[in-house]
Image (tube, rainbow, N blue to C red):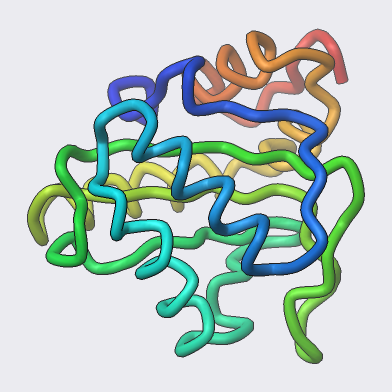
Length: 155
């Protein structure tokens, strides 16, 4: 379940970013600001995204930026940035509006967070629920509580 990796402090909605790098840095800086990663981690996330290219776009309108735990992950955590305007993340993918950044403190926790994100994203209405959430609190609630294919109240 994602709830143990979440904090309202690491959710930003209607963010403005001019580029892929800016959006990923927003995600990474939320992790740093809450003590989940070192100050080197956001740059490592950008580097990883450049290496992986479109592969970080894991679902419609959704990217999962991250870096290796050895590049500054301090504890397992997820950050969420919902962009005000979608960004083009590459030729093969459609524009992205939702970034679910994450880090782990070791290989096991890194995979545990990734698995929890994948499980959440497999729910049919998960992404639309996050894109429709009117507040950061509603987005947090959706990530913390949506474990079935039920539509959330505000969508």
